[in-house]
Length: 86
Image 1 (spheres, rainbow, N blue to C red):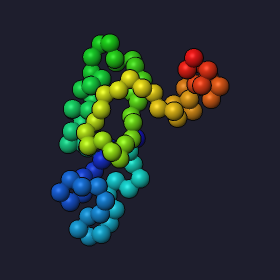
Image 2: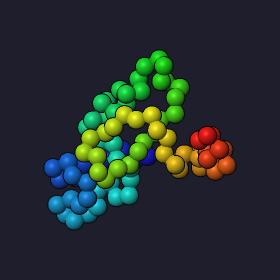
Image 3: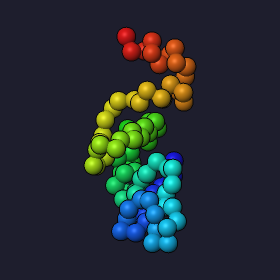
C-alpha cells in the first residue's frame, strides 16, 4: 500500500506542472498517518490483520469489522472464504 503524497492543496491527481501524484495507489494521507495507525496501536490489535476498504462514497474513514470479498486471495482459498459464511 502506498502512502498518499499530497498534490496541490492536498488533492490527489495532478501537480501544478501537470505530473501525476499518487497515481494508482490506495491512499492514506501521510499528514494523517498517526490518526490512521492509532486505530491499531493497542495490545489487543498489534497482531491483528489490518483490512483497508476502498470507497468512493465515504468522505471519512469507517471502522468496520467486515472483511472485503477479496481477502480470500490473501488468506486462503475461495472455497474457504465462501464456506465460512454459513
